[in-house]
Amino acid sequence: MEFIDEELLQYSENHTSPESELLHKISRQTHLNVLKPRMLSGHLQGRLLSLYSKMIQPRQILEIGTYTGYSALCMAEGLQEGGMLHTIDKNEELEQRVRGYFNESGYGNRMKLYIGNALEIVPGIDAEFDLVFIDADKINYGRYYDMVIGKVRPGGYIIADNVLWSGKVLEKYRKKLDEDTKAVMDFNLQVHQDERVENILLPVRDGLLIARKK
Image (cartoon, rainbow, N blue to C red; front, side, top):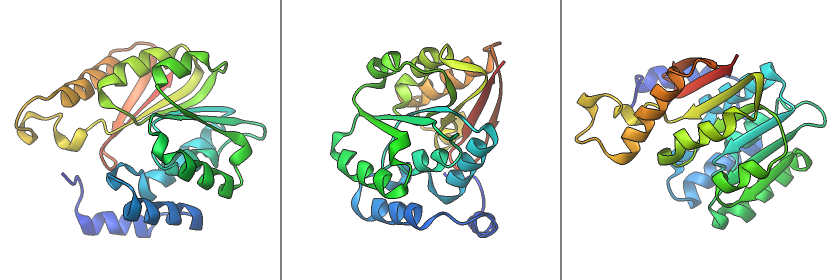
């Protein structure tokens, strides 16, 4: 479902700083050549991630769910000098494409792409994260959160995408309570009840949950 009138959305994008030529290229090529292009963060959400990263000025970023690299490159714009972005995806078919985009961006030496299971990879990354972005399989959102919360510094942020799940978090917008929808709802409640963080759920695109570790 769309949460905002299409013309209002276009107005918002028209009054948002433009994406770079490379990001525009990634968006276009993803829509032309990659399955499920709706998974791409896109212009509006990408500029929001960039803005958050520039405000936080992270030294270490973790992303779970790379897809074609759009969101990773947006967040890399705010990295401190000498900082590193770690991004993980299980789709090895996209690896060459993503590495090419990273190398083209100029951030390539500050971005590390891992191919595999995030639940196995993250514990082996020796870093304290300033910013974590979760945008992967919804079934494991709660497990990803439990895994990373202890690796986020006090004052650091966790952002999770798709937390409104096309509106299906509300009964009136779903035909049945499937596993993914239940997982998203459980995750939202899990974060909301976690006294270690303060949180806000924003109805941007498919919903962004932002939690700041106290």
